[in-house]
Image 1: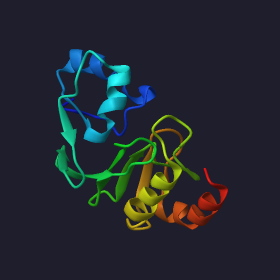
Image 2: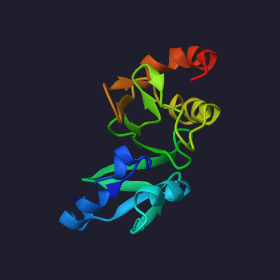
Image 3: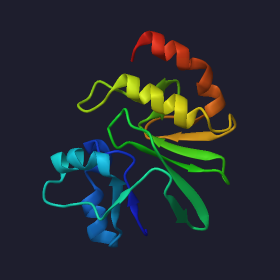
Image 4: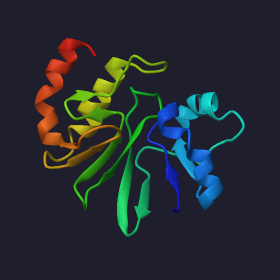
Length: 153
C-alpha cells in the first residue's frame, strides 16, 4: 500500500486510517475542505497531504484524476480513470441515488451540482464504484437526476 486516499471524512470511511498508517507506513491524503471533519474523528493526527481538483495520481500504472465533488461533505472527492472508464465515487453517487445529505456539513443542492457538473459529464459507459452497495454506470444514473431533484434528497 502506497497511499490512503479518503474520498471524504465521515467516520465510517476514516476510522481505520491511522491504524493502516501504523501497519503500512502509507500516507493519508484528503481534500483540504474536509480537514475540519477529519479533526472531529482524529484530533491527534493530521493527514499527510491534501488533494486538489484535477490532481493526477498514478496507481500501478493507472492514472486517476481527482474530481472535487462537494455535497456529501465539503471536501468530498471522486477518482476517475479515463483508461479504465471507471469512477470511484465514495459517498457522492450510489446505485439509484445521490449520497446522503442529512449529516452535518452535507448539502443537497451542492451534491446535485457536483453530480450534474462533474460526474454526469463523464462518458455514459463509465463504471461507478460506490462507497456502499452495488456498482452502477453513469448512463444508468443520469436519467434519474430530475427525479432526485424533485424528491429533494
